[in-house]
Image (cartoon, rainbow, N blue to C red; front, side, top):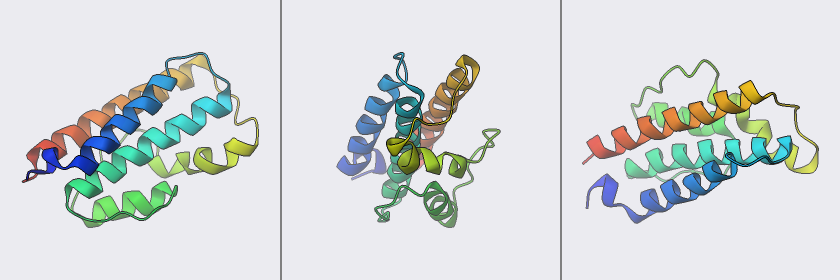
Length: 127
């Protein structure tokens, strides 16, 4: 079975896409931020699973990016550290979140689209 055929990888792509759909709606900042973090988390976990490795059950994106890098992956420079989105996965669920502008929202959507494209290309290249 190839990495792309791995059911866990496929499921994580689907679940990430569900988070991405939320980002197309006019939702409160905290909801947008939470689903941004969740989409990133699931894409990183998909890449880890594609390598045949187990990922920890964590929302800490620094832990996940470190694991991705330990697997030999070089994440693109997105202009922001993915780990900067970690607080969106936990803290904003119990708060109003950080006020976002329309520009930030479009930047975050693009970051996730770029990360998805990167992960998809890497998964496709793995045996």
